[in-house]
Length: 450
Image 1 (cartoon, one colour):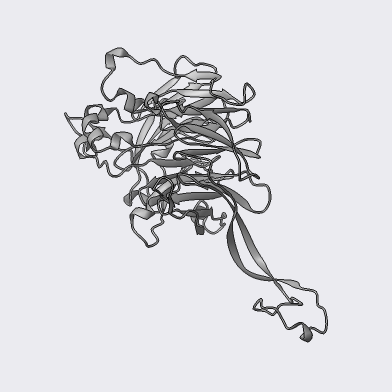
Image 2 (cartoon, helix red, strand yellow):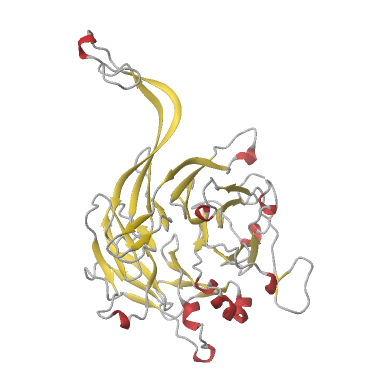
């Protein structure tokens, strides 16, 4: 598959889904997006605690453009608001992360978490209904046993397709602080969950206990200098995982070395240039997301202004650094005042690890081709979401002469931000969450449709 930002600059066949379904607008803001392992399903979580699953339509001979459309498959309430009476704290229902489990049978399983509680959900289809019970009538009520004079064999009759979502496990009481990430291990038996100060290892079948594998909480909280911001298991080695910190470092840990992975196996940290140090240096160097490449050879780390690619075999410096929105350096003061400087942007690899995607402000998202070093800025908007529309590259200019379609850095809308993005595991299909809208763009240039 050839994937490049240049091709995505000519994306056609974008489609958008808007999942506003009543309630307050705030509750509809999408807080996480995740494709399953085949890319046939796409799940979103929102601030109202709901999970919406979209399913890809099968290819139609009559409409070759029809393939790739994602339609709502199932919607369910995953989390409800809770209250911690011991701490007098309200625990909001917002879904922080969703992770799909590799498919083992006809059903699908996913983990979803809010700040405190992780839940395992099973998604199954039912298109047959049993009829002819001996002890129950058609409505399911028990019959009077004295009226049962003969036995019959129940039969399965076809019925309308029903998607059933049922909670299988609830992993509660594992975290004192807010859960920021969950990651399923390649052994398909365990997963980890990380909060600000600790990472726990869970077995998918055991809900009442977890094993603490990282604990950076100091004896005196006044000595606290950094927090854990994200963590992920290696895609192939079940003993390796990485976690990022608010100080801009990545720590690779090996669970074979010791039970408690407080001592990292490798530290990936770029030394700071004393000449460029400012009041904002530590804030903007905080890593908001870390992702292993599909090959497992590289790690992608997003901080406020850049996205960096690290080679697992080289700790001294990143092998690639891409500037996301360097024009914001002069605006850090106002971004600090309106709290935007603390926004946590995610990043994603394409299926072949050749292109990187991450979000920005003004509903812009950025793509970087690692081979050609080309980059492009695209916009997720209502205009670009009409079927067969073509995404036009956007440019932000800082003072001086401006081309017709350029947008001035002073007119960027910082309330429109793309924090959550996901890339189909094998194809050029991307999902972009822009506040309460989900945009799905697909590249027809490389999908063999023409």
